[in-house]
Length: 245
Image (cartoon, rainbow, N blue to C red; front, side, top):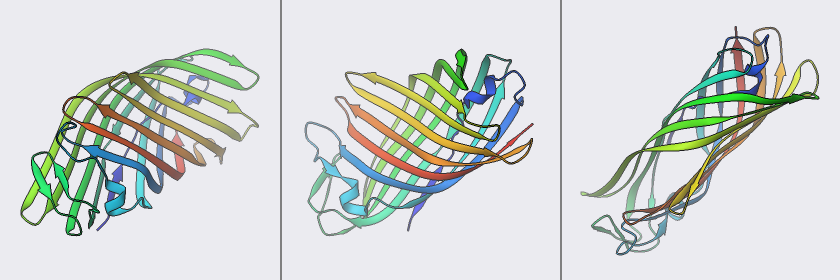
């Protein structure tokens, strides 16, 4: 059984244009792929294994919804609500010690990966010339994550709740009156881990209120600390519908 739910709200650079709509809402849907999903809990005594080896890399369906607010010509806010849950069944290719329990190889195992992200962002337009706009700001992110393995009556779950400050950068390039390139990024790094959410999309304006778009997003990062080692790299290919007023 496959489950994937991913909703996200992020700041569009076009919101800083003086005559841009006050509110915009975007629905995005497409396919999600995993290229890295490595886990070792705890790092000193657990077994490092790849969840992709057990359940594959996709594709998995995903959907994103965004709500954007323009304060004025140069200031914008982004509210992000991004629950992500993937649940798969497969078999481990090795015996795995995970969070105090031992899981046998070649035995049916249920894997659940959850990474809920809640963000509030502020961005300020610092450059506008030749159709380009650049914005910089910051994002406050609350993550609610869990990695769980279940094998028969044996289950181990590692939940994690925490706050992460992120750098926010966004840009847009207006090619014509109806075609626009949009980029947004949230990023942080420390000696103990990193987080990257980078999107690149082309949008076509249908009329005053509606536009269609499509593109690519990548989410990469993880942590290497005393209690957990976990790094993931996800890829999204999606189409988008935007309504503004």
